[in-house]
View 1 (cartoon, helix red, strand yellow):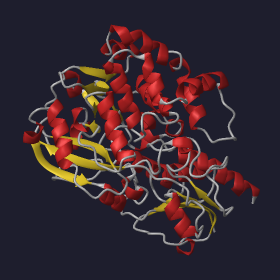
View 2 (cartoon, rainbow, N blue to C red; view 1 turned 90 degrees about the vertical axis):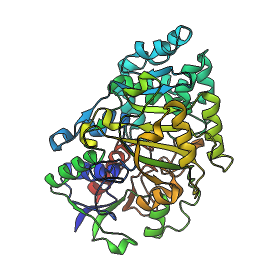
View 3 (spheres, helix red, strand yellow; view 1 turned 180 degrees about the vertical axis):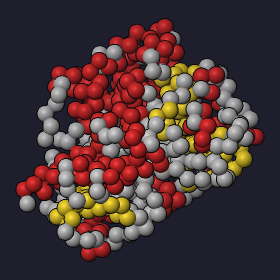
View 4 (cartoon, one colour; view 1 turned 45 degrees about the vertical axis):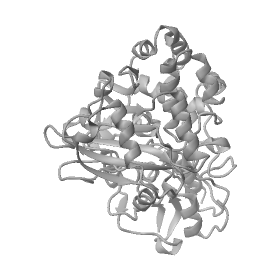
Length: 469
């Protein structure tokens, strides 16, 4: 009998398996798709030689993850590559605000009236960043804060809506860039704890950047799987689990799945019926004949580029997708251009490019034209560079990754109390109605993103049980 079986080979499932195997437990992972990866995969979606990331591409949370930083993933081929700028936010007049590694460079891009306010916002937290990130990503109740004072100060700043925090700034560049940071989790700007979301992304950039993985996001998943195998664990792909009886006997079962799927497989009935899923995404992967012709020079050297003319336009797009049930006319876009820094991603002189906008949950329309109109506003001539495109709306995203219910790439709405308490209003989020069954997906704290911390935290709950039985 195995000690633990993990269902789902995304970053969280693989991290949970690694943490258990490191402690001497026998572990097997079962994945429905033909390869490991979940939200961290790389595929040739358009043309031969163009390697795209179907979901995540830039990794501020991965490089800052306490779980990943404790593992020898570089030994298994993971290499981080940093663009000249982690992120740029261009404006229609050709200027741009930037999120640079340097706080000073970032502050300067906002203009003299907001430079000081930005410094005062982020600089108190940076010296204590490693302790802070571990504290707010750790398992609730079982890990005492390493720096409770800094964590409390962060909570005072982060718990209010981002609309209040943005009042610290007087001009549009700083407000717009920060609104874009919040929108990465598809949360309305006036939601609970949205200030913390934007602040985390900013601090992560200043601490260690927003890199891409050489060769694509698949390198993260492959490194985790290779390390697991070296620890004696096994990985089984093309293995769909429809019920618990499909799995081999084990002392514990750990699910890197949506709560909906877990309830169906384990027979939990309506246990997660109150769990809310958020807006969907409409994503396009491009093969380009050259670099994106951004008008703003800063955008040409940034790994990630946010697209939204101003804070009001971003707020309108988020409100349309999340509250009004319609696709926005001018979608807020998150774009990533990995080949700016990684030439292995495309043939010589060519580029890969990735863009998505927010749409209503389960939306079945086509946002391609609206996305490309937005891109043309900030990069005139973009369409002329397109060699091929691969589009994926909510149905296609959910088909590729069953955790993305209704196209929700956050695996659950990041709003209300569900920002912190997910998938249930409980202090034991990784436990389920069955004492031997656990959940470790992004539907658990600390939530969405490629960081492995949900798997790391769930593994702590699992090995506590294994040592008791």
